[in-house]
Image (cartoon, rainbow over all chains, first blue to last red; front, side):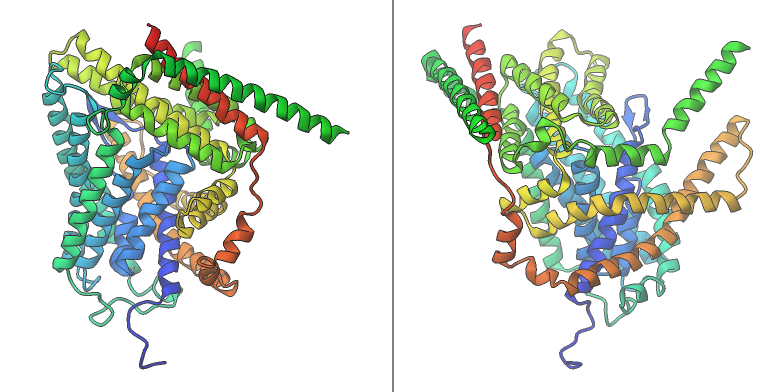
Length: 280
Length: 280
């Protein structure tokens, strides 16, 4: 067995990392969701205040499990539990968080090297924010009909989104992502790994730096994310839903209403019957 | 003097309510407190199909009648699901920050009344989809929800995450609160009477929250190891992919007349709205 055993973590250890990241990041995003977002003028401070948690864990453990755990945690705790699930659009958040955290985790070889940890933390945050900004701009362009025709809208969207990105990165990114990661990673290194029965990350257990494969994977995932978000919020440009109706005519709609009425009546009758039989 | 007193009392009252205990209660109430409602008794599979329609179709339709009808429908179902107040408040804030602010900004850049109609349509779409998801995801009991998702072939990891999240969240919140309290007991917060003191106090609080994650991470690491080991003893990773296990797990779901009636009434309402959009 010893010969086969690799230095990377086993399946159950990956599951542990997944559960750990999910629980912690989920809890944190639940708080951010519950705290009303504070706005200064028109600019919204919408940073992931607690992105340092998955960043830290991705630098210490298996990056992919940590990244997926973080994205799932956010989805389950703050979207599904609070009933804020946005359907297909959530895929965008899921994938951008995964990409940002995963890349930051892959960048760090030695968690004791503070400089590298800092660079990785800010890169991961910047990536996540940038992808979100791009998708947001595209979204408004597609969702509102005649985007260019609405007076003042294009400029306002570019201005607010661009400013929000810079503001998030420089203010909240440094304060809430960079500094806590710099504080936590060296402090947890060597202490938290034994709790999961693992060996701390070093030259041997490191997965290797960013290569072409990782970048390609990230680009494809981002394309999927952007596509999903646009599909979720695009208007009639993709499916000519309204045109179909226009041709279908009133007769068909009346037919639909009649069918629905018949269905409701039948079901009520059947239900009453079933209830009576049960009573007897 | 008396006014000051009332004001002070009022702000104290609000702060009292917005404690971690309050948040925990609201989340728990949302998750488990309403399993006797009409919505909670419906079959999760039927509700998910319904959600797929109501959550997706409005994005492709720009007819005001249809959108208003969908909105009214989800308003009724949300009322039936008896969703916790905090979630509804978050919904209102969310809708405003997603599109409401755009309205103000586009006025700022020289928009006029022609801006309102497209933005109203966008707001209706956003509101309908969020309310539909609130109905489905907060109205249903987490275990039923995860069973329903599993029936549709969602990854086992996701349904596990949902069930686990609801169980572990109250514990995590309590632990986080205890850590924060112990920090507060030993700490020496800066005086916060002046403005500068208030800024310092805010930074101090933020620092404590960040620091609190250090012990929380270690404790959660231990707990997630225990969880995964307990799961492994029960053969979780094999059971997760085994078809027979899945069958036994999903055999409790049953479609009744109520489910079909719910679908039929929704269908009737939607087709009536289409009829209305034809006639007017």
